[in-house]
Length: 584
Image (cartoon, rainbow, N blue to C red; front, top):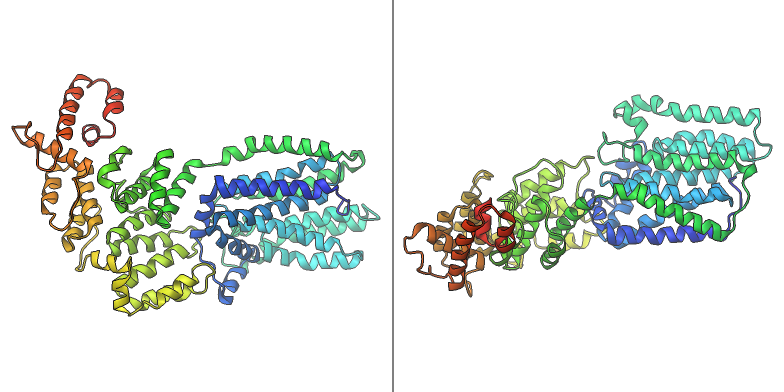
């Protein structure tokens, strides 16, 4: 079966269609899962790094997977590489299936591969391992001399395991299938060879246990196929089994399979592909996670306007995305005008407490960084990197740690991170430019980002206290009263905590930040405080427009009138601070 000629359609056109479909899916519909993968590795163009990776079972496949993953920083390029990788698996499978109707089943491995990669914990190295197994089997099967072919297969089986990992057994199965298709076919010699080869492949993990400092079960399930060593690898093995088992079907039924016309093959393949999309891929797609990853990526790239545009069509659905949106609003000067147009989640949607995972501290770190709490941003970033499940380092984290140490004047530490980033493909230019700033106080002070953050950061010892955000932000603001972001974050924290007395006190302390007019939500808060604390509520508070005062009176009247109709109140007042104050 391995040498059956394929129709031009089966062997070329269908994989081309697969490549296009996968590029569209990962490049436009699911791109931020690729960004997520890229940010949790630090691929170095360095021999020491290469040896560190490939010196473990499955390391070569993992190394190639990491190499491809670094391109995921640019989703469309990364999607193209991923699409070609998966389509190549399909082409190698089609080669084994021949011209019969079974060739239509060649769409199954790509569908299972996409299902696998919808999981953000699945690494690309697993798919690389499967393709390497197919290519290895193909090369060995091409050897004409039976004795030489079998000898090389036996010698290479341990190499398969070390380079590919446990999925190396796919190569062994494919070699066995191909052996049965060659003349003189099923003989005692062929059967003995296949049994020996399979036994060797299955015994290798146990034989190598004592040489590798890895728990025994991972020697069988794979070390680097998933981000977490304890993760379920069954979805990956489904891909590997489909690649290995489909040719067995073709071998078993080869006498009863007649060629099918390319058009019939096309129609049947498309029907199976569409059915597989709805039954295999769609249930695995996690758009909620994709949206959260989108907010995180836009914060990383500081795309403040894009974040706000995204929030119109896809409102934040958790504390992390709300944190990013609030940061975008304050960076664009719209926090006091827009923040309650979106569902707020209290202070955890402004500055969430630390969580011991790899993703959420990064978005929170971005907020602390931008407002000038550099030490807190540095701690959150460092802890996020330490929480990466497969213990890799992170290019994103290295970049931020270099920046925080540069701003704090810790130049030797900053240099350590920058020198490492010089060995990367896509961060080296930035690292070269930033290295020139080290020790150059004038250049740093004049830098549009680092100079501003150095002026805004707290210049004396202070402690992070997630139980007292207002006090923490007050220290930040008082250290530099021209820190607009720190000032507005402090006001926002007062509003979200519903501490109107503190809000009025902070607003009264401002003597360095000017507004053309008091932002709408600040006016609403001041008017509410005034109505609670002043007997003469008809008098307009300073800075509060008459329309705000009238609006508050209408709100109080309607709240009493519709106190049992929360939907009506939300419809008419859901975007006011007063509604937040009443219902949270």
